[in-house]
Length: 330
Image (cartoon, rainbow, N blue to C red; front, top):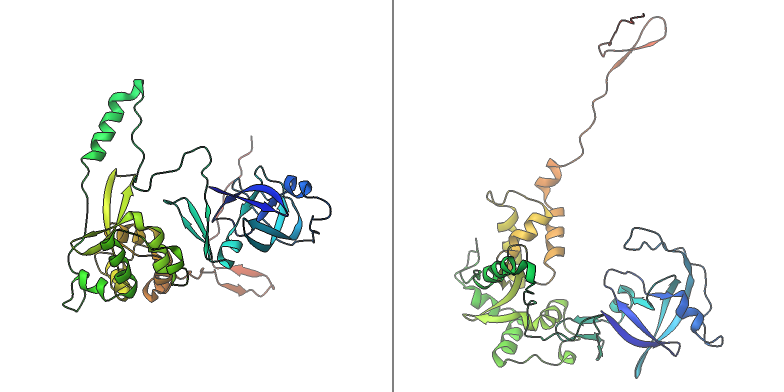
C-alpha cells in the first residue's frame, strides 16, 4: 500500500509500512529536489536493517516537508538507497495519530483522509472478505474441492457466559456495560459507520474496532468479529471481549490446568479460537511475562563446577575422573 504526496514540492509515492520505525526517503528522490529546497543532511547514528537482513547505507537525516494536498507536515527522515520513492514509517503515524482503514482504502491522518493505493490491484470491495478461488485448467478438480471445503466450513461462535466468571451476567450484558462496545453496538444496529472525526480523539480500542467495522456484526445481540482462518479453511466468529473481562479470559486460557501455561504464541492462538479484543497480542505478552510460576520454573540454571583442591606440590587437582588411553604405535 502506498500514498501519493509531495516532498519539498516533488510528487512521490511513499509505501505505508507499519514495520518501519523511521520514515525513509530514497537517494534518487533527494537528488531530484531543487537545490534551494533540498534539506541539509546531518550525520545519523541509526542502523536500519532491510527485510533481506542487510544493513542499509545511510546518507544522513534531514527535515522534510510532506505535503498531503492542503495539509503539510514537517518530519525528520533518513535518506538511503531504496527501490521505491520512500517509506512512511511508524514515527510519522504515531506522531499524527494515523489509522489505516484497509477495507476503505484510506489513511486517516489526524482529522483528514488520504486515499490508499494498492500496487498492482484494484480497489477492494468492503463487503468481500476473501478472494474467490481461481480455477486453473490443469488443477480444476483440486481447486473445486478446496472451494467446496470452504463453502461447507463450519462457523464457530461463542454466545454463552464467560468462563470462570462469578457473576450472573451474560456476554450481551457485559458488552452493553462497556462504553466502547456500547457505541459499536449502536453502529451495527444502525448499519452505518460514523465519520472518523467522531472517534479520532477516542482510545485505541474504539478506533481499532472502527477500522474493522466491515468485519464486525451482531449475533444474538453480541458483537462478534469475522476471522478467516486460512490454514484450516474455516470462518470463525470471535466474541469481542469487553475490558472488564479480559483478565478472566487470560486466566482461563493460560493459568488453568487445562491450559497448562503454553506460552505466548499458543495462548494467543487458543484465545483466537473464540475471543478477540484490540491489543490482544500485547496483553498476552505482558500477562505471560508477569507469570511468577513460569518465571520461577524457567529461570536460568546454575552450572555445576568441579571442585578443586591444592596439593602439596602447589598444583591444582580436579576431582573429576581422569580419562586415560593407550597410544598404539605401528
